[in-house]
Length: 280
Image (cartoon, rainbow, N blue to C red; front, top):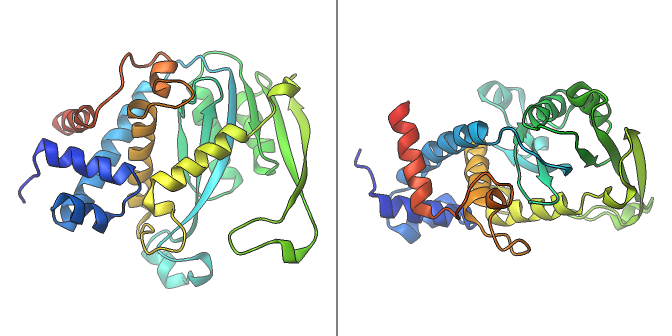
């Protein structure tokens, strides 16, 4: 199979991280759909490997964690035993965490919204840090065991529990019930009440949904395989951390965190992918 040149591959990546689907990207760049699919796989593997190696010994201070919903293959209500035997399908959650100061997203996890995945995610986060942090999550009970398993007592941890109304008519198809307020609950250590918030990570989740077509609701652009979903997520996070200037910072999150000294261009991402493939 002929390989697209570096310029075309950079255009493919640019199109994907700006929220276009596989087929839209193929039309915009003039390449075959299979070429775009292969690019997603190559980029996803390289991006995940690069960030796993780079996001180490971080000096983050205030972090917020959350989960963003999507689905793979089919909606959860359409899942059958036969479909599950063919591969993971139905509801899939992406765990994310953001540094409130640098807006860096150091790690993520694609999986189920359960205690096992939450524990793996929090332990991964803990392994990347060099100092004690303040962490805020939502009120999901899975974090009550995941955070102590990952950090022990060496953390200032709080939950921000949202209180919703009881009126069933207030909950729409793609909107939660009306939030009547939030309750801050200290769980471990002594978190600063002024910084108990999930606003940054919730805004980040909106950016993920806008910048990754597979998260867009009411389309047929959803991932058909779990591996494809993970590859697309990895590509987005590398672009976000290294190649997208954050408006409130005037620089990329990687620059703000001291990981990188310059903003990456699409050509830099293509070069990183090539280097990964040569070494593997």
